[in-house]
Length: 463
Image (cartoon, rainbow, N blue to C red):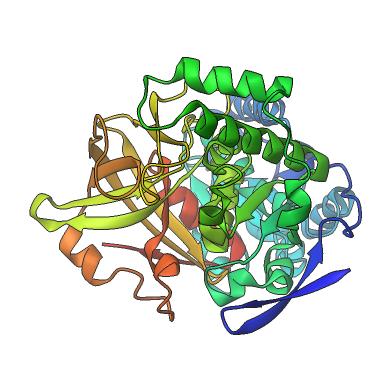
């Protein structure tokens, strides 16, 4: 069954979740690791030596075990024929991590990788050969290639992380409570499928309401206790507000598990007040590694998915506002993850608040993020561009006023320039599409550049 929905003056056809084929269990992302030759002597030549080879193999094994969702197909190739044989074993379009070992061996065996359209990351130790000069030349000719010219063996794992993004996207299932919002390509399931390989399926809100558990459900009672016991303070919400929000949180977690989905967007958040706001549920999902987007913002959702796969961190989707007198940019929203450094990280402190835009009704978290933290502010738009900037958190209110509940104030490079050029690459007047960005702990600009080269994306640094 398909449902035609009128969105932003265009009609998109979605597949209903109830009629979509049952999703297959997710497979590990297979990545071909290709050593370009045997190591050379330790005391001379432009080559990697045996000790470096052993260190590389050990770090790859650790990364494969720690990441858990990749399968490495490892081999050696000194010429094109050997490379082609290993690529056949790895499978069509399998991403490739090439380890530069000897002078000019990479250039002798790379052609089958380039001809096959395999995303290619090259790891090149200092003095391991002159082949480091060629990957970016290949990329400028239109091939999906990036380069890690580094002595840091941890960059092997970073390369594997960005390489796994493409196969993980191809197994991604996104649930949408319509309407979708955002840039026109991001609203289109057909274009998302064509560009990223991900599936978008619709959830009928009325059918979902029948699945909301009662407050007496044991999982709901546990959710209520957890939210209330771990909060620093409960300000506006009544017990009924908290109970409704906890019921929705449990319902969304069960929906994600039943549909085996990797992402969720709700386009009618503000209309959920009578049955319970989804904000607590969004927080729980993001903390468990499932991106969830407010206001049906598909660009923000795809941003969270892209970076979740690349860095294993949750994102804080929020509205922006500037204070040029302090060279600062605020980000604020009424839902936010507690665990910004991964599913096993320590959660941030929070208050339970009423939603700021509906007279304090409902229940949402006000999360208090860490002062002094470097952050990356980004958004993947039009399925072809990453907007990105960095900053440092300089203020977090003890109890927020104005705007949405969770707030951070970040010092940025040039607030006036950033405000003047805000969303200038977007051809839309829709406020939410222009406004939202997603914030991640850490500086991930270089990771975004690698993703851009591998996925054919433009990188636009804001401010």
